[in-house]
Length: 399
Image (cartoon, rainbow, N blue to C red; front, side):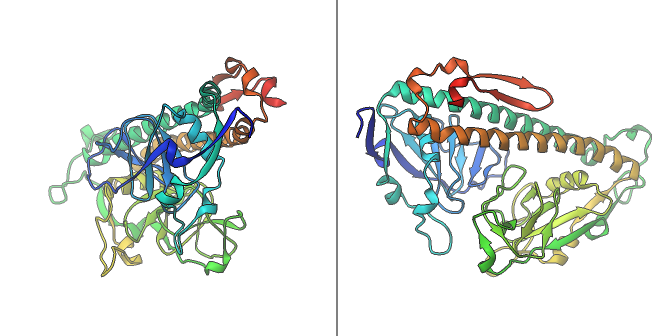
């Protein structure tokens, strides 16, 4: 082995800890992480130092790095990195080059164990300065991604607060001249209606497992919330057959535990029996999304079952929502759909940034690029208002 490299067991570089479900309802500023990424924000944390999050069950390629307080669900491991031995961010990027799915020990659900991970042998650069350089180069991409995520959170909050102002506190445009119905407590012309009156519903149905694959053949397949993200699910499974289709921008509603969790289809997908796809009959999906978010502010507010919570098609159809006047609906949907378009564009920008970073990653880790001679400052980044974050690579990266 060359002197600049050394082989170690992963357990020598970090201590692996178990995540756990978060049951408190209050929202805060601490990210709650799952295998699909950011799920929501909470008020307390499991750990507040640099940590590598490693999947325990589910999507085994879902690695995340945290350098601020965080919480992880029980399908994720988190870790305490020995900073005397390795640069935490360098180790995180190194682990992203490993196909952890090939170490799966689960019989039905893909799984990893602490024993397996602790004994995993890896070969890393000995030089802490080289580790730092590599981490710095790749972190630049992550910084851009993180900035986009912050913008997404602010946009989401803007739409939610506006919804509450209009539809909960009734401070909508023109409210000063509107009278209220004494019986319903709603503005005149408003009423409560069942979801089925304003939306179309498709209940998922799982194709036979023989049609599943991880080679991106067919359409992305989502059985339930396993790969849910903050707004959009992450694809980890595909199916070549399936007739229950959620179209792009369909609202994804979880009908099996946890009931009521929401995401939005980023593209056309096949949905399994754990999900339903909901679309507003007049195309006002942005309005409907924030209506449902306001109702389902926590999991399992409806449903029952002997083993786990679940709901039927009729249960979902009978969900009551507030129906305002057409003018207010159009105004809010115009506003929120513009917000949602920005969120979608930022999400797609992040996907492109991740793709560019992941192409560069193995070249840096393998030594294909001479890191010692590389001027980290030569990689310049600038913000382009129309395209989002753009990375400009120098000739050193194009060899």
